Image 1: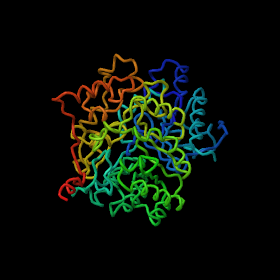
Image 2: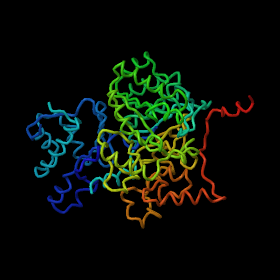
Image 3: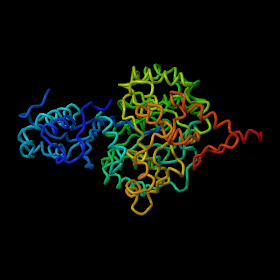
Length: 43
Length: 88
Length: 376
């Protein structure tokens, strides 16, 4: 499963964000799923 | 089905949340899905969903501003699809 | 792009691994020529049952969601069921990798009765003629019998785990059909020059044309086939394969070996990638959070010699273990770089009379049989 193409809210604090609109742009992106089988390698 | 502000839902009983600096990891022991919750506010909302009658009540109780509700609803819908949340 | 922001976050490391690999024993009934841990004989220093429980207590407190158990053959340990039952009882899911020798009808039923357990049966050929030269005589039948037993016990969708080599790469469709016939899931992973693979990699690793073949096959079937995200070096060929596309070593995954040594990943069992031991002060938690090695692996890496290529964002320079054990610099191309940047370097190294390729730090291989046949 590929990472869901929803964006991410970085951990940067919201004080950095000038307007509510900018908050909303970033917040398209609150969750993301990855495959749990990934990166774990035994043969 | 799509969640609305009047839907009631809660964390799936087989899901564990692990706090991380960016928010939390959610793992579903049943379907083995791993989901990143990328903002502490989402983590708070997800934890509290089961204690309120609806999504809208939860968002208000957690102090999430109205203009953020749409994006939270989208995130919660995503979590419902992954079965991290279940509709009550 | 959003995915790369997540990757950036993950590269800085997490408070605890997402999952980790734990090799329970170096003992094995087989002697696969590509064994990543050079297993065969038990090590006297292997963790006791109580020590294993103590590690699991720590992993529970760290909220590690699940562990990959391997070896050696993990089911050889007499306390195998004690360990996995203790793990699951502590909310640590278990996925274990086995050659199947100990999955008889009785054990299959016992395994089928457990929750939060996944099983991977290793199989490296669709028939004994392809499989047994790599995994040992009789190993094909052993694996198939284990699969039959799991199916009869209604275990559910177990996994068939294939290491892709130049000899089985044409069998991917057949592996998929075999998995489907069992209601199982196919998992294919990349061969690394690790463990005994140091000596067999040259003969086994897919050719450059075959790598393109793997890439195209995964693009067509990737949705339903697991890969452990191990083929991200192929992404330089074009569209990204499903998965995270990053090296997780020391950042989101690591390995605990049978004596408790903690390495960055299962494919780098070498002192240079050993971060500590679970017996150290502070235990596994301190090793994960504070070891010098893991801290350095979480710092931003440089594209090095790959910077001028233009594909580094796609392939990430490939696999650290593959580079290390072929003697290539870690900040350069992968030996199987699909654009050919690594193959030349490997060839040059192998041709050089003074080049020394690193050897794995431990070797638990059984004494060679050929030594006996010389006597007779």
